[in-house]
Amino acid sequence: MTPTPDEFRAAISRLPDGVVVISAHHQGIDHAMTASTLTSVSLEPPLVLFCVHVDSRFRDVLDSVDRWAVSVLSDAGAPVADWFASPGRPVVGQLAHLPHRVGAFSGAALLDGASAWFECETSAVHRAGDHDIVVGAVVSVEVGDPGAGGLVHLRGRLRPVP
Image (cartoon, rainbow, N blue to C red):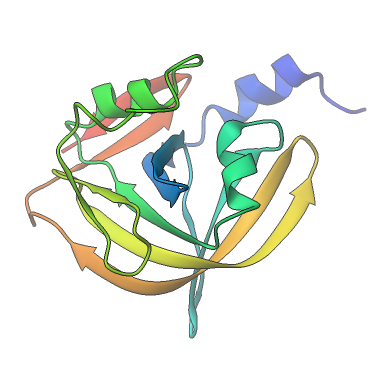
């Protein structure tokens, strides 16, 4: 029997997922979203994937841009994750209050204080239910402070991992 959405959510929430912010720059506007998984797909060539809801603003942006960036949030990144997961946040100025720099390849925001950064170019998009799976070729990587922890989503909550 197929589980209900609530049954599935209760079970899958037991699997901790690393929390990242995906960003892109389009028509002079910085766009960003929180994703609760960035997965390594391949080492050669280096590929990652994330999932995005088909009806989200960020998904619409990906129809127009192929380059995007990932900031892997550190153990202090919960407020940032909450901000980019907040429905109804403004389109313009999402990053105005957050220190960041612009990625040389993607032109997208790389958030200060992250534990790692990736710049990517979309290589494939696959529909999967109510989400799209976005596969990106990794063009550049950078590792942050060696002492920075991570942030995981577990049982419906953000939890720091030192």
